[in-house]
Amino acid sequence: MSKSTGLFAGTVVLALAAGASSQTPAAPTPPQPGNAVLIAQYECNPADLAKVDQIIKEVAGPVLSRYIAEGKVTTWGLLGVSVGGPVNRTIYVWAKDVPTLVTARQTYLPEIMAKPGWSEMARMCPRQQTAINTMVANPSTK
Image (spheres, rainbow, N blue to C red):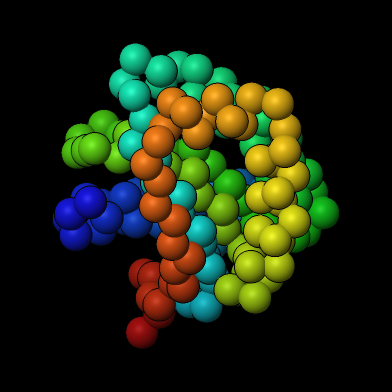
């Protein structure tokens, strides 16, 4: 993946997370320096993208949404590429800090991977790259 593609994906994730709402009707807390976001980027067979989206929504979605409800992560989302490539699907998981995100990932990832359908996801998306990033600045920082 090129630096520009990674930068673009990270920018999109930050923009979406800034506007993401929690599961309550209250205004979302904007991302703050120190927050952590896991970005898992997948190179999937373009012919399989509809099935990939379905698997992520039906397999990973309920697990990650439960982690939001339990306060273990802040939000999660699925991005589809509009411009760029070869990465064409990105899952992001946001938390208050790196230790919180790492602790959550140690339990949600095995749970997701053990569910029926996830092995099909691995077949359709044979290349994956994951990174945990820390927010350094946003529009409200000086």
